[in-house]
Length: 316
Image 1 (cartoon, rainbow, N blue to C red):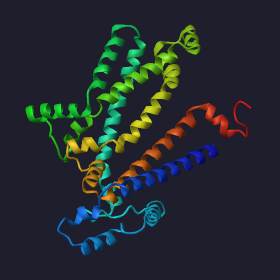
Image 2: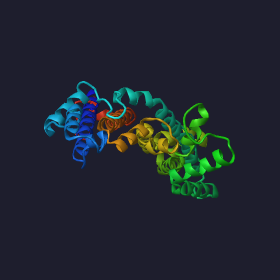
Image 3: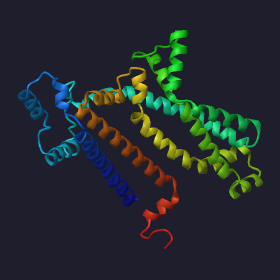
């Protein structure tokens, strides 16, 4: 089992370093001079050269790349923002709680509504309840999150004056950002749960359990759900990765100073330390989430356990 964990951990490191190299190349080869944008058009050539030297972008390509990788993965120093003159890592960590509240709120709401909907539809396959759930899912998955957010703002903020339209404060400030971003997730979770249930519900072991006289609720809880949850766990892993990685648009719409908005500001100002630092943070978070997901797979799936707990691969 330890071989499996070490192998996945090494792949996670490769992913993080690869993401760092890619974002460095993208920012380095982007046309234009970020120093010229920072200093303005009226600056002299000497001032521009001094600023380039201060920012460290006057050095050769390979030297910049090695310095960036060393600082990022050995020293864990993601630099200082050129615009705000603040350490990027500490700024990300200070903004992270707001992003996490929105992301985890969306994920919890998606799971709490989507999975029961999928189970309900599967248990009433071919009946009006099943068609009704599928129809609702079709509508929800067709609604763009940005349009839903704007409609919610118009209704609950401008018309009914029940919820704030933007900014941060008490819990009420997070209701619209959370609710407006879960429509597609609920539909996807419900459809995936329904498909997983239907794949298992006609299996031989389920038929045997029914023949033994077990109640339908017990069959669903003990036999169907554990086997139908594997694809759902995969989707939940992706949703967990999006807890912080998919927050940029929502934070921009609702003016929430989180990690996503910080990245968008860095792109607007061509602040390379912010862009690179946020990208590394997203890559690291996603790699850790999928590492955790792989470990959950290894714990749940006996076939993976068998490969790494014995000296021989399964099938030999």
